[in-house]
Image 1 (cartoon, rainbow, N blue to C red):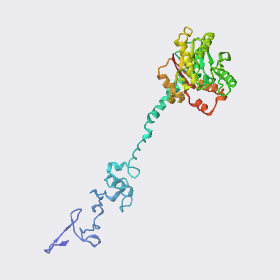
Image 2: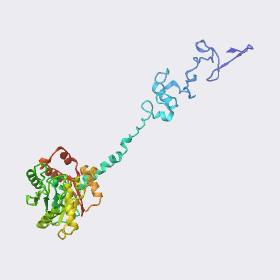
Image 3: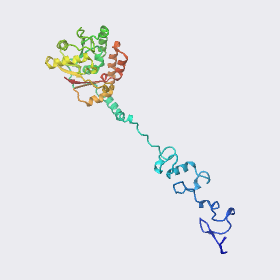
Image 4: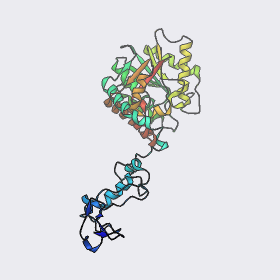
Length: 358
């Protein structure tokens, strides 16, 4: 009870309920500012700075009512939009990282990887498609069975480096391929060695030595800077075609695959024979397609690309036949420099040959 200035006693009303009589605990009057004499549930809780929102009651904290769990307090402050370690407003702070609730935000993709991303996404498709095509069919599309085929090369090792799929495919199609090499490859004075290596390589590819011919003419040197005489070369090639009763000629296109001048000379000679009508009746000419540098060195991944593009003949080797082609190339021991060993690993010409009619 408390007396009014007029002398009458009146009851003191507590903040949490009706008026209570009697002395207050701890010797302090009811309603004092300290609030320590109020029941726990009646005490005003602390407020967040800048938010105007009261904190939840302390009854459920780990400290037995003596304080909040720091982790809970930190997250409640973040949810209320108070600046702290997470910063920002409630919804943003809740997903701001390991100090708040929710997963951390995704990191942006580096700009350098943006052009590579489509390739990485298409890589499994290319791998699966190429492997399935190699298992499903290895051979020739667009070549009739039977007949006699001639693969026209410039140097010993061309038959394995560039034409192995065509040779194995023609042999599977029953075309009985033969090889005509227009030089002995004597650029480093290794002509005799390279002739023997050519016979060994053709033997691995299933072509007997009787079907392998080397033209060793002094006017047809193995030199990347020399273009062979078209008339002379055309005469020698035509004589061999007529002697062997050839009805299909396979050689380089105008790009020569590698841009070698001797390769391009072969194309010029055969094109001259074809345009002048000097080839035997019914004799067709297929030229090996030159591709860009990217396609040239993606190995069997180019199988799917070659199947999607228009061609007149397509030869695809299985994995076993590709190993056979590599063994044929390894017969050219004098030519197995470090860059040719890399060629064995990455070249598409040991897996697929795409050709066009002249």
